[in-house]
Amino acid sequence: MPSNTTVQDLAEISQYLWTSQIAQDNAFSGGSINNGRNIALYNQRKALDYGLQQSLSGVTGVATMVFSLCGAKLQLANQVLSAGSGGVVPNPSGGSSSLAAYRYQFVVGSPDSLFTNGGTVATIYIGMGNNFLSNSIQVSLDQSILPQNNPNYISYTVSYSLGTVTITLNQPAQTGQLYIITFDYFDYNIS
Image (cartoon, rainbow, N blue to C red; front, side):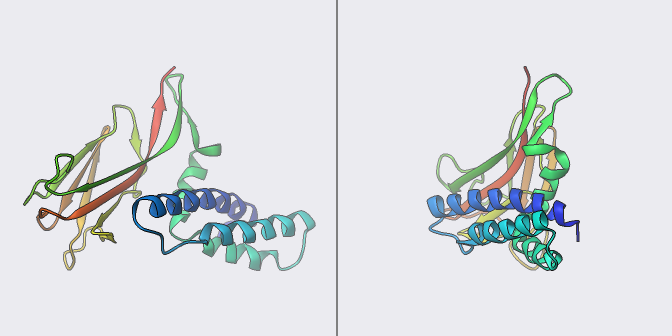
């Protein structure tokens, strides 16, 4: 487990990510199974902040609980923390970059669908110079999250190239299926 102060930083980033995810789920997916996680994380993070400021004993136990509350957002929070403060990364070409979220919802057979009926491959283009945050992609089918690269279930594989991501299903898409694709990427603004 990381140091208590690193857990403090990870928790703050995770809290933001959970707040964003819960809002998206409530707005677009009929609700979230994690309602309140951001509030619990906020309360425990504030307890950890206080414990660290006052040098209280038992602060490591609180840090362990805060660390566990980060949950599924921990990996992304760690990548953001490693990339730079506040999600901003210096761009060597003189601009700046920020962490951007991508969410696309479609029904197979509709004009905006990324998969055709019977198709298995979808390609998403986010622009030259933008980089995907590795392992942040998630594909849902009819509001169930699909596993990655698991031949025993309906699943998908992902390949990345400059400015594009290709998603390949292990079973053909069918008309009427609802897909939601989410991921994060660094959006570079060249000044």
